[in-house]
Image (tube, rainbow, N blue to C red; front, side, top):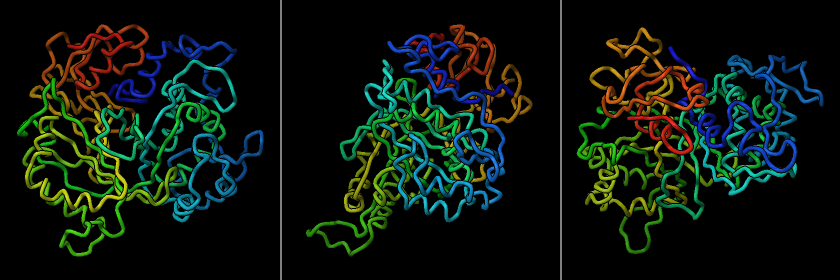
Length: 460
């Protein structure tokens, strides 16, 4: 199996690194500024050391827990962190956390997993808390934060990553990115954010992020679709009109607000929302759309406490199919339930670069957002090369944390079946970051990234 620690291929590091012009030296290219060391990442050294929480501390007396998957087996280890969590010593990245949500998580420190849902808006230009001068944009500064080794040490992982392509509605805030990270338990999350090496890194997040909402959510089990690739949908995806996700971030009224001119009985906002969903379900299914995740919000870790209740992620076959859903008469007839239900709402269009939220916890990685499997077997789920069908489709590409997909390595122009393209002839610095040698069949969304400026692969 060919692994890379941060797939899909170049999402948070390789793409950011190429965009910044770096080639292994974080001080090169656009990262450099007028002053010495300006814009350089904090010196975080090697991945976090193994430390015993009760006895170990950094040079300033900060308790440090070992970042391992075993953290979730021992709730008593929370005591090593209580003072820091109560005192607000969580560093730049999470300094504005809501005390009420911290208390909820501390009440059940080893229960999990849970999903941290993030909406992110970047500064136009990075502003560092220590006053350093920099030419970095907010997005570029946040890319230096990328805490991949801390996540991996505790068996945490990002399961959904996307820029916001379009914002359909909301309160006026225009969001740039969506990220969902799965944590095995609250204790693992707390141990990471108080770790001194992580806190040193988080200055880049503070510099780059202008506004964020961070919610602790729990995955609701839902059935998977009959046709996950949507090839038989009424409006199937095409290279010109690809599939995408619509993400609804919702807060419900306690009592649905129907207005004075309706004869609807009194019901809760969530009950009104379910009535709306029922009215559109048949049309949505007929058009080939399907929900990929429902996340129930426990509380906002950062953001307006109590404003959010649920996140619904729906995979749309194409924009043409989405517009057909909006025009459906049955859906329109139920629209008044939606309007009555929602107190707060952001609806966002996303073309994810990673989509691995399972339909239920315990499913293999990739359960939500399965790739299309072609006739020659590209896209087949795999955990090793032995799972691939052969005949040239012999390589299993993985993100290093679970299930991957089979691909044709060593492809040439035209060798890959739709919706995959053969990516090859990549610039040397970029090629070194990719989990394949020479060329491979990659999904269209990844191929689009690898050919976008300033990257330099050929994909066709």
